[in-house]
Length: 172
Image (cartoon, rainbow, N blue to C red):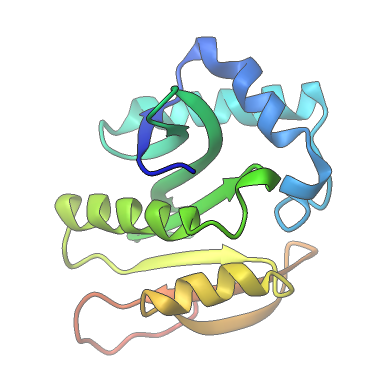
């Protein structure tokens, strides 16, 4: 049983670890619909590395079992692409680590990191509407669903964690 996680930003030498994670259909079912080819993973990984260089604390991170330094998933804390005044979180785990409470640990880490960077910035998560486990996890942390529909040809659901009281137009 994994008791402690560590989080490490991706570096150029981590591509094989990344591809081994995202090539699995079951892991990517609610993200891209299927596992990623080497070419698609390479393109996404270049984007991840570029994004990671833009901010010291934001980006995509490997989720590692602290006991043996093996990758069990990944996560992200980034500026939401449609509104830089909002953070976006995301996460994925290898299938063998599902339903073990690790998603909770990952969310705790991401939300703590977001709080350290900017305690007033709202946080959203974009999930597939059929990903009930992810929705339940986010709701446990106070996220509220505010959009379900199609965006850029993809079926999505958006949830938000509002950090400060304000009038919020939920058209993010």
